[in-house]
Length: 331
Image (tube, rainbow, N blue to C red; front, side, top):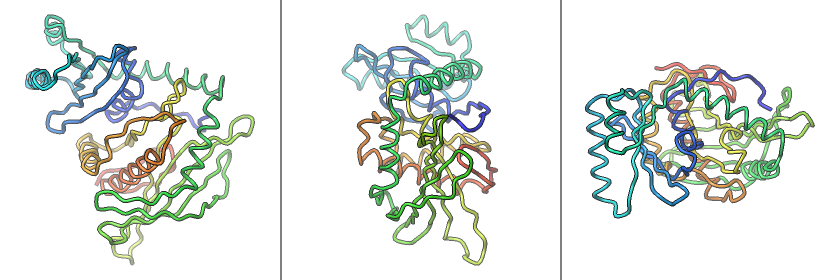
């Protein structure tokens, strides 16, 4: 059903999203629970449970391990063991682990995982094909996706968080269809400390399949910054989440983490974005089942997408953009 062929580029941001969505990349028994990224330590701690309800802490270092980072890993292990009463199992992971560190882990009975780009791409290609076949073979979650789309288009989306207040219009507008797509949107305004700072749209793009059913595919937020001189032409900026990618078609689990996944960003910029997202209280929900998608889940998803959009706009010079594409250049 995707309308274009996508070139796979595995960014760190995308890697972390995949580890949360598909914990079986590392272990078939893992169930993702939570994650926290350390900007200074250059790692993300991912917490999983297995089918025996045992905790597994995976320390995924974002680049090839240096000796100081190995020391930092064992320091974190010692702290966790001191604080936790129940047993914890640890795993050291990185895009590239030197043989001596693998040997060290083996001798200490600590699991390690070498998650290089080639391995991840091979796994992603296989999984993407499996999910495409799953969607074509059984449409178990079609009605649930439709319901989710109706929620996003018609329910009250007004909310507030940190210093922001979001006002969303009640009227749903259908944009002139293009090709196999139907676009529906609602107007929005975002206030920062009671001052109108952004205005734009929340848009849902539907794609038609081979029997002409409409599937909600892309959820997008487009904003225009009003804080600049109004005499100047200010370009709008769009960020999207692919609902097909966010949904695990085998289980119905909907992942609420939204990957940045745009070209032109350095990891330091993404780190800053995620630091603010966490500070604004938008990093505690990770997933829910699509059939138990609540008002709280809906508000969280919209807040997070709006927040990511304004933060990414601040970090980039805007280039022409449409849902599903990644085009930007750094300041």
